[in-house]
Length: 104
Image 1 (tube, rainbow, N blue to C red):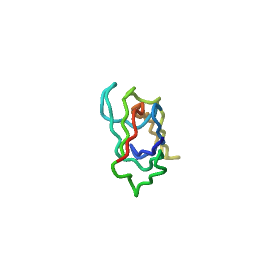
Image 2 (cartoon, rainbow, N blue to C red; image 1 turned 180 degrees about the vertical axis):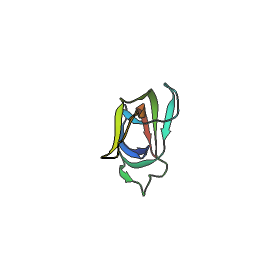
Image 3 (cartoon, helix red, strand yellow; image 1 turned 30 degrees about the horizontal axis):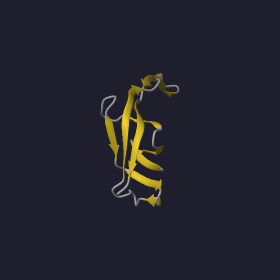
Image 4 (tube, one colour; image 1 turned 90 degrees about the horizontal axis):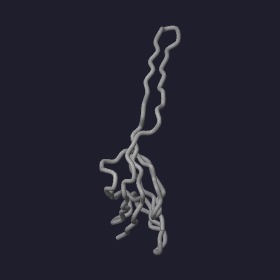
């Protein structure tokens, strides 16, 4: 059984027991999160496709880790204008372990 969920503006294919790294979600390590924006569920009843969401479906997950990714450098320049800007960015993430996929 698997599902496609949306969180942080991105869609992820998840199954029971898998680890997924998503955009930052509120919560502490060891806590649980409920993802209710389920786009598709494939299970015993066949494929349930939402329009746009599957009614009554939800995915529960346990928070394994909260952190930040490695740094990237953002460099802006305009030639011949003596304009240069350097900025770094580290995106926050939440690592989830999927514990259950439920449908109505």
